[in-house]
Length: 364
Image 1 (cartoon, rainbow, N blue to C red):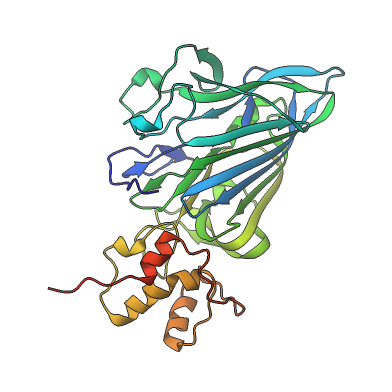
Image 2: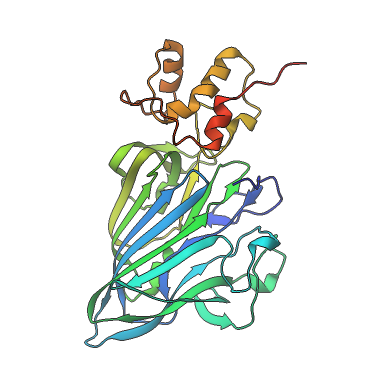
């Protein structure tokens, strides 16, 4: 994503009274599928899978099991609410009330694809505004009357008696800021709108199926859950936030998946996933989607230049023959050695090649 986040916008209150205000681009907030009117349907299971990509986007795949306790089929209006972005461009907008940064929205119920409609509505109280609108708030004071308005993707869902399986997917752009490469927000609390007020069986899976990612999730988002690497290469640890005194799970994963699980999950906070600090140092964080050499912390010396040239290889697990280079990367928590790695460049990104060809500025 090349729209660099030095434009003035506002990062909203995130959760649990913790606020971060900085120059940001806030594109979209993921959300539960929710009943747009009261219902007796229960949400028995949710598997929320988020795949992080190298282009600062995420692919979201959600599997639900809903239980209809009644003896006859029940049809309800169901939908997906998406907050408007804090900053967007005229060319990003359309005339169909579709969110400008959510693509390829799909829903299947019991194996059947369900057609959906789009509207602008009031959050948590489905009242479609009939005329075509564009929600593009440049700041929180741009239109006080629109504070509770959201984009809604809605459809009629028929639930048979007993368990019904729902599969939901979409692709969207992550936010970014002058402090973080990217951040992802997903609203968990709307699960309380279902009849049981909870998710009986909840699983969160975060993956980097084609890349390596180093990211953080505040512990209060996952309420006592412990992360577990279930495939690929990865590691986790509990750490203190760089922004305040709160606790976070720090996670590094390469072509793998980390999982959180809970029973009878009643979310008190929304999910907030974010990268490491943008300019905290090459040994503190590294992300293949952003060019950290633009940060002013990089020293102009031969060894630092060699480190920069080798970052793309280190993120893929290369074990270095040079003891000094190997010692440096072993000091990086995100580094995960792979003795079997060969110097294959077929999946190198534009950012990777920028590091490979990095040249320090000449001193005047």
